[in-house]
Image (tube, rainbow, N blue to C red):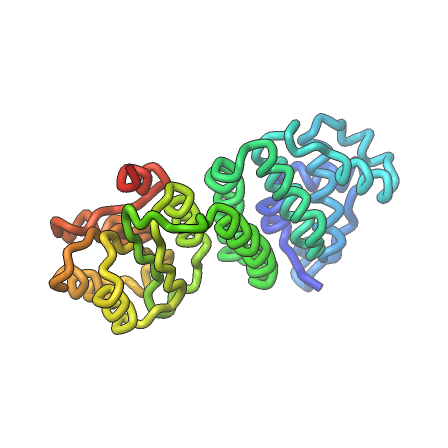
Length: 291
């Protein structure tokens, strides 16, 4: 069972603490336990209930009406809400509610609907990646546990791999060759997988080395495969010092190729001022090298 403070409950649901207090006092929507210092303490059931209440509230239901509903009626309405008719914050709440229950069927349905309504690329750039960023922020503040983040990441990763397989051509034209990797100790590969999808969809060849690739393996692959572009990046600054050295090592290799550096590495690429190292911050940055 998870335990949440009033602030954490507000961060996850998007309902501020003062409003939650008023709703508790006026409508009895929650009955929190108390710590030894008399602070409010909430559990998973409280979080689940308030998430569903927040979804209905943001969808236009009055709190007085919601408070009079039975739990099964609230859950039924939340399940029936069409994500095409809601804003981004409400979509986030729908996802987090399903994540908290480890409800994979609902998450799959939400992702499928989002892709159908927005298209695959827009769904990832405008909904799923911002969702992961939100989840990461909630995890870093202790509002969500790490298993929840891994659960969602694994589902999205599978979706990406399926879509990559769909756009993989029978015969690769090899117009341009892109080698993609993440440095040692970096495991957050969803962004790299998405770039792989974009490159392949545009008819180019990809050698995907994936997460936590040793430096020597990267250099060996470059020597054997001779790509025109090398794409990499990091999310954490912890790995920055070692990767700066790798960038310089790659830049000194006899093969001629362009290095596209994403995530925290994009600013480093600008500061290094090497003629063959460029920042990669968005899909648009990548697209200019595909035409």
